[in-house]
Length: 484
Ligand code: PLP
Image 1 (tube, rainbow, N blue to C red):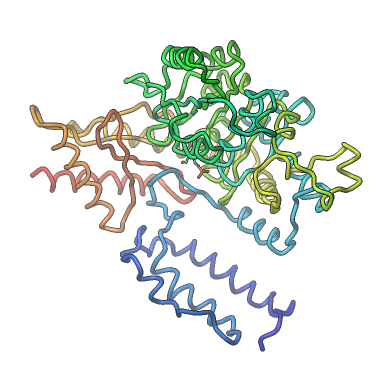
Image 2: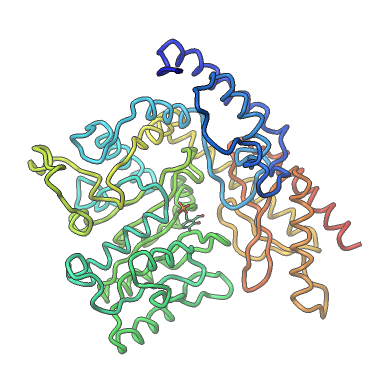
């Protein structure tokens, strides 16, 4: 039997693994951004059952190249322009290694005080960095916590909102009234998913109309929908405002939405999953006007702030309300520290009980880069995106379809005069297919105002100007082939 890995073996293989990752990052451009594999190819390279006897580590490592690499989409490739970025970095990866080595579980303060207290402090650093006010601080009535994803943040906010809207009866009696959830028609699908998970269902979600020009939620339509619901005996539970929508990075008018929520005592959650990172730059913080009046706010450092997946930073203005919503204290978790009331137990701030030491990677990233380094990272991408948008604008065959204040540019080939919309949609879809098929770059699409649109999201750590330039040249060349 192969026994436990000794410390010497761990050192030896650990160095090999670090070397492997470093080489991967150095050589990443040799891979096609998206692997040319079919469904089942990767699984077919694996045996049907686990090995009876332990295998040498060399076999594990070599299967990274044999099995994993041929089937990997390279999110860290400098020509990966799809979705939103999911970043990583040296300090983040090393912190994850340490967290794995420590193997702590920070469900309670007492199960790992450092896991809890580093998180509390580092999230407060981050709060200051993005300009959230004191009320979201543990020194005030609020506080921050790391969730795995923005979807979890929306779920937790929805639960707290239902607790508030029901006067606490949600916890004891469950769903006794009819409740509604409001978000723009452009909001992320996690709002709808949260409504399903809490038992409200799709029917409770009001997809509020957006301004056709900005694609931002219309507060007048929000008011109308709430009035209709109230008249029908439906209780408005939560409004989710988005700063930086997934499709086009549209920004909902948070101040006007906050007015509605304040007048009607409705929970306001701000989802800034992608764009929240931009707020570390003072000149991009205009996106945060009004968020000081929210009940909860989140963004994903794992998207654009150089922290590896997964790390969503979530703040509430009233931590007591959140804790009342989620706290269930069985005998086996009772301990003196909890009973003293002097500590935070993050199990009461999230859906799962257990939690790992995610704060370590956030802490190391903030310290390694410093505020200056992080701002430089964001500004570089925003600058590249603005330059890219300028190139698109200068080519009369293309049009920009939405404002692009961050590092996402949505664009498309224009339709021909008199051509049905479907024709232009098909041509844009074909353009995207041909581009991605090359393996040299990767973009994704969306629909904006019902039209097929290409999304160029710049945000990978290694993306340089020449990668963006090469992508644009390729887009132009494919467009020429397509329309000639
Ligand atoms: N909200 C917005 C605005 C997003 O853009 C995204 C993902 O892109 C999400 C939520 C979901 O993110 P996560 O994968 O962290 O749940």
